[in-house]
Length: 300
Image 1 (tube, helix red, strand yellow):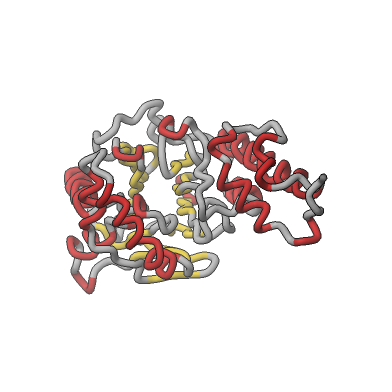
Image 2: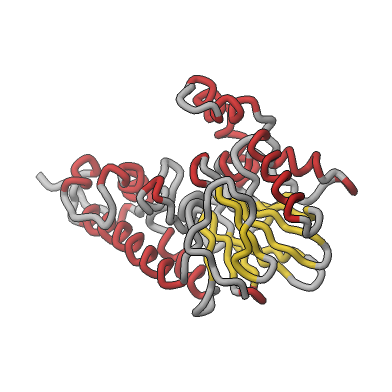
């Protein structure tokens, strides 16, 4: 097995992190694109944030010279992981194009969120990539599943698993059992862009995220390589530590709500494992997602 690089430079092409498992790390949003090779071809994990960005990914796949793309997986609905879908369908159009796999929730969620996201990108000229995001033809995954799907690459299977809701409703991890590699999407966060804080956005499920990570951890060997959606590959120990912190967020929300602390006061009412300004959505959604029986009337 290749030694896992301690540093993968942005925009430097695909780097092998285990037997025929590669990752390319891109400067824009510090996003990763994964690649898994087998006798039948390549599986791409996530397609980057625009058509322009995805064409660069295709160039790098071809430069690697290890085969053609025969399947694509989206780890969740967000634009930086799905907006390149159309390029892979067009560039590898033989036999109708490669299947693009994702969780059942992704097509509808993507259709609902994409127009506003593209308008926001159109209005924000702080980075040149935003114009590319705004101009992208958004194409939904073509093949969806509720819990798990195996992708046959000939001499190896890649397991696509929905371990539960966390970062979004439709998080999927791609596990390569024979190499003990997992492409974890944004269920795991390493990137310095966010100081390693998981993405508790306005579509997260903070109360369910810990249990999703519990299942992820169960699928990892002791020497597993875990590729997050953003940042450098990490170890099983890293994932366990992040699960503990995500669990503290969930239990703190549960405790505050059970004691009747109003949601508007919650961020200032406890110590958190992450900067409280990163947890605004987590607290609001956590309170909303708790059953009534877990909440008390606000303390006077």
